[in-house]
Image (cartoon, rainbow, N blue to C red; front, side):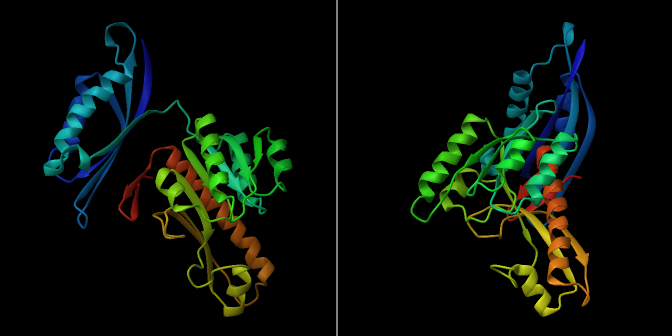
Length: 295
């Protein structure tokens, strides 16, 4: 007899009995729940659930993934209320299948280097399949970790072709997630829509006060007392997608622009890594323009 662990996530209109119904279904199929978290949003009327459970495999206790999916699909239809299945979102993923991702970067390598190091050290719950950049500068870094590097230069006239090539790489590497690790290009509305909920970006938290180039120098000139970084899902609205994680640090008048930049880069690396891990662990559920994080 062997076992396999799964993660089940669910978002649907809130109503009584959802947790009990899911737990009973899993029990009926011989599964053992190892972790369960839920949240009902009073303001949106949505209910969110994340369960980890172990299913037995082998002998008379065979529970195939297809069997579990079929059983839960039948149950999930009951959770949609008047809207039916259209109002229910759910996923079922084996925990031993690690998500794969492409990391996109321009010329700043601190977030990329952090993610590569975490992967090599066993601290990242996802596999970096490839690095994509609009500049060749960081190819050496990807090479040093044995990760494929693709230089995809882009201009205003070539954006459509460049993004088409990116989608080809997403398919060929069987990628679940694209991470913008200080990728300094705006993605098209079409790409954002096609990969909704599957692109994570990191930026300094000075927005919208300090947009554009040299944000830490702008912050220094204004005498800020807090600097930070925000990891969020990418949408067509620039830097306004659902927030996953934020990090901040208190600073004062003695910090130079260079010191603020160094502190900010550390914050960006930590916030991005945490967001990627939470996404990979299926702990992030979308709630309109917000997220529910089951830590």
